[in-house]
Length: 363
Image (cartoon, rainbow, N blue to C red; front, side, top):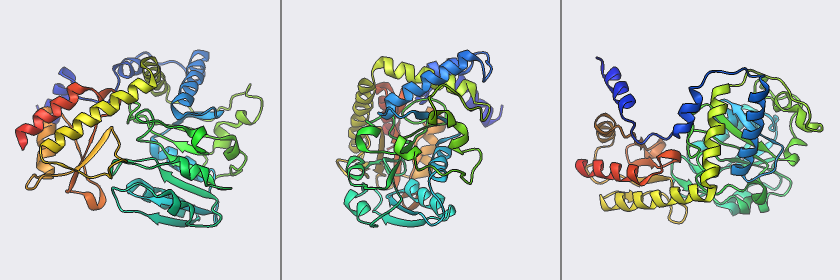
């Protein structure tokens, strides 16, 4: 057999610390139902209710966009950013930079507020970057650095601006309180702390944001006027826009149900406990924390490599010999740090211990 076949067979025989809830795999493999089947529509409505819980919102427009988190990001910008609009972006990693790219492509006047990687976004600098922005955009949990930024102060001081927040790596793993923090537009992903397969982008927008949505965005597929026009009425209608990815939504529905049954606070406590044990273990093996203290994500540890410890070869050994995948650094941090996640279903002490034992053999 080829190397690919050997690895695929090994994964089927014995799952490693994979970040997918078993209920998601089981649900996604069930026989297909129609995308207009009343039962599926009921599942979709209940999925939206469950997403409101994890987003911390009562927003009517809350649903999973058919596409990865990047589709959620693009939807957030194309529906609210017109040429000439002022968009202030707090940049402290790769995904803040991507926000700037998307806004620039839409013809916005982008005001970058750059921060040192590994540091949180400074609310005062972001709020003081422009006297009257149309949009203020920030990343809550920066995937490239493992840093959490404080959103509430920005929401409190946003004035007339709409606050747009990337919650891809935060939703489900740490508290997200969209209504209390003044978030107007937020998007996320399913493959991080929600522990489902990639392919959907949970999305929410406030009534305040809906009042300022563009009538005709540049993207037809991501035009929220077409996807969710019924929310502007009495809520009794439903807009048909595209064939939904039925089994992915059913799997997300099941995962959210499992999380809420466990209790969202308990899920987040599990993430914190695993993250603390992982950081302690990595530090004991000679790794040095990268993200700013007090703003480190509990479920995404970032650390400088020990002296003489090769990045690429050791990550490959972990994957080939132990079925453990570790992320390398991005941008200027490439080759210097590792990004080690304990998210979703993989946030279990057995997985932390398994990784630390494997690393002990490599150090």
